[in-house]
Length: 184
Image 1 (cartoon, rainbow, N blue to C red):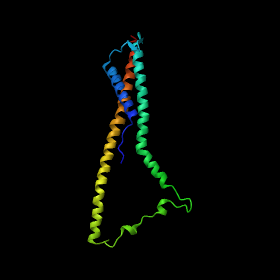
Image 2 (image 1 turned 90 degrees about the vertical axis):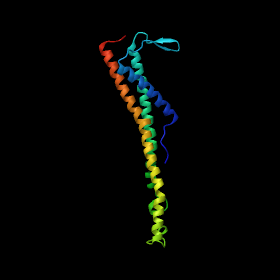
Image 3 (image 1 turned 45 degrees about the horizontal axis):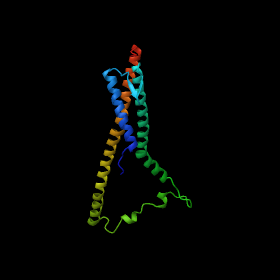
Image 4 (image 1 turned 135 degrees about the vertical axis):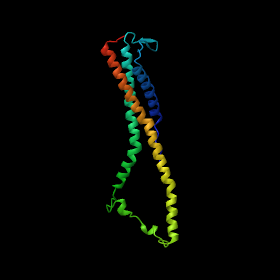
C-alpha cells in the first residue's frame, strides 16, 4: 500500500496557510489593534486605515485556504478514489472477439487449489500455513490504512478547519470594527 503524503508544493501552501491563519486567529481573538504601517519594498502602504490591513490579511488567508482546500481534496481523491475507479473500469472491460469479461474468460481455477491432501491433516496444515502467511499482510494493511488516515487528518483536514475558523473569526472581528467605526 502506498503511504499518503502531500506534495512538496502543497506542504509549502499548508505551512503558509497555518502561519497566516494563526496570525488571523491571534488578531481576531485578542481584539488587538491592527497596524497602520505596512512597508513593502520601501513603500509605506495603508498609512491611515488599519481596517485595510485586516481586510488584506483576510484576503490572503482566504486565498491560501481555498488553494489548500482544493488541492488537498484533489490529493485525497487521487489516493482514495482513483484506484477504485480504475479497478471498476477494468472490471467492465470485455474482449473484442468473444465479448467475455475477465471473470468469464479467466474463471477461478479451483482445480489448482484442491490437491490430493484435501481433507487430510496434511491438507489442513497447508491451509493453516496459508492463512498464517496472510496475517502479516493484513496487519500491515491495517497499520498503513490507520497511518494514512491520520496523515490525511493532520495534514489536510486540520489545516482546513483551522483556516476556516481563523477566516470566520477575522471576518467577524473586521465587521465589528467597521460597524463600530474604528477606522484608525
